[in-house]
Image (tube, rainbow, N blue to C red):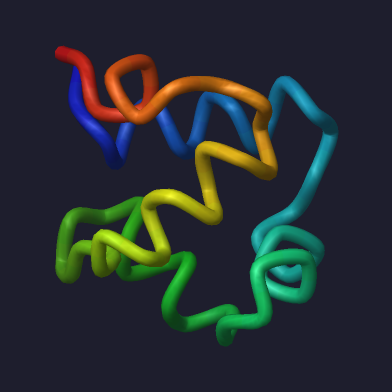
Length: 64
């Protein structure tokens, strides 16, 4: 697994829809969808925000 799979797992484990996560991270629904499909990837700043939101390290977020 990589970032896109980890993000989807973390989101669903928290009981969040893509829209709720988008609002929490101040990005669009389309952005979350693109991240989860691997179409695009977040910036390092966004990765840091995501890790903070889920209370995990960047390593955990990005690990295969």
